[in-house]
Length: 221
Image (cartoon, rainbow, N blue to C red; front, side):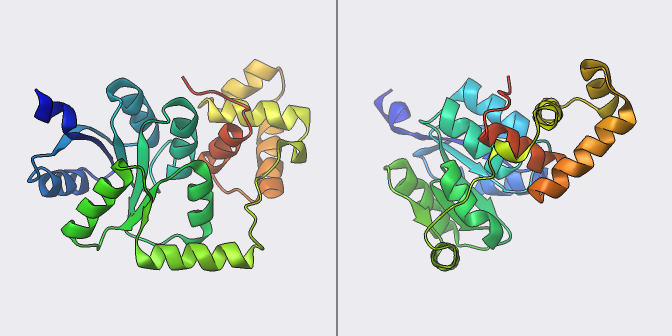
């Protein structure tokens, strides 16, 4: 029983089943690691993290419904004991600092060796951070270029009505459902959505959801 309690409990989140199975098979060789569950999208990752309370969430950045930044922000607030490690095929330099700001504890590229992935898991589980060398270099360069600041996108950029629309988008409502909810025309909702995206320089619903979470406009259940 003591050995089971000392195991590192993992949740794997990736929208490609073959990738999840491959990572799981690689990690299952280690007796001190336990694959507690898998998730195919961001919302499922949040739900499974709340249910299973894993020590580590290994997660891709680009996933359906909620992306890596939004998931990290939610878990940082609601399940802080679950530490998030990004495992991605690409080095997304535009996202690295925002991921760190969201509470991500590690970032490892998918072409890393199994030994380095294991080291990342063990390091983060021990309370440290772990970033692949290329990721760390990009983060540092971006931090210096930004003058040492991570600028959040403030909700004050939007009108009251636009904040309502963003909150409902984040809750997964369609334009027609938002129209009925707010008592405005569908075309008006579409106009609000287009204007909001221009203001925030956001190009999809996942980005709007991330903005809503970061600014406490919505709490996903």
